[in-house]
Length: 494
Image: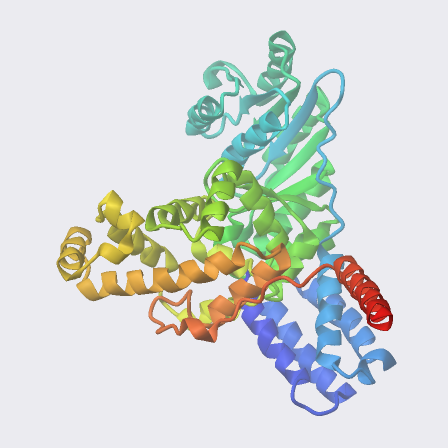
């Protein structure tokens, strides 16, 4: 996501680099390019104008003009203003301790509203709540069946009525009553959508709002529609007083204008973002992390949070022990590849690692997923003994593995060579802390380890072992001084 705006802002910031001294003139030139980048990303015109004015006012301040690294100061100002533009955000859903909490979901047709209802129900269920879905979208016949299927997938009850003999207000009212009987604590209303905002839609939603008095009204917006998403958010908010927005299809939006404009135009915060079709692909919206992604700084915090949710902790500890002991095999490598796939696409993962964005641009049309599939195919064609002891793979075995995986023998040979180099580096990295591991990954990237076509020299990548703790160093020096004094006394006695 945000590829276009990230690249455009990167070009804009070049106006502040290599100029010797920063002046008001090149600040205005840089801000002109920032304005153009935001407008091309489909950010609302008024939002863009206000944003550029605020950044410019701070950038021409004395602190920036006299700074030794003015370009870093300007990037810092833009980063903070992006955070201010999209935040603050409250992710809570006002779930009551006693009684039933009602969440009304609304939005236009095609925004992913029904799927998002399922994602939200799954999220609430995993948090320990007992949700129930109510199929109140009677405009689209398939919506009821779709919601029932989603309910089965996540193990959540779904209340529905015959569209021919009912109406949305009645369905919502009866759904809340049914939830009380079943003991459900949260009711999620999947209301009807339209192809566009109209008076009939708003009247229906207002009737539901008056009838069941929902605790939260959330609007589901398709991020790929750009300014249309912002305009519809404003119309829905004027009619219903929204509590939050959920932006869907953000993984497919390369512009990002909706994410940057919604809060500023409507005053309604983006609470969650949908980043995939799977029912577990609903994430909290963090303005600071999103600003980091927009500026190409990555989002390592979200990556670690994803890893904690998806990875098998016991399996990871076992793998780490194997690395430290130098017993890491191709079978272990395949297991780690499968764990990584749970986090999403390799391109999305690489974007979240600081400093990896430029590497993705350099890769061009190369697809890391294709390369991972090819590598897994080669490993699958090996015998268990070969995966454990790759040194035993001679020419005839290489040819057999190549035929079995549909590649050339040279590809098998390259994998074995890269694995040998990488296993040594991973053994060193297993003793590093989180920050040092991130730096090591960046070194691996610059050394070509993540470029399938690169000829990698393992000696070019140095993994620094973690330095000793400060307190440990103090104790060590203190002990050395004591030992030196004792030695002097012994020498005097002699």
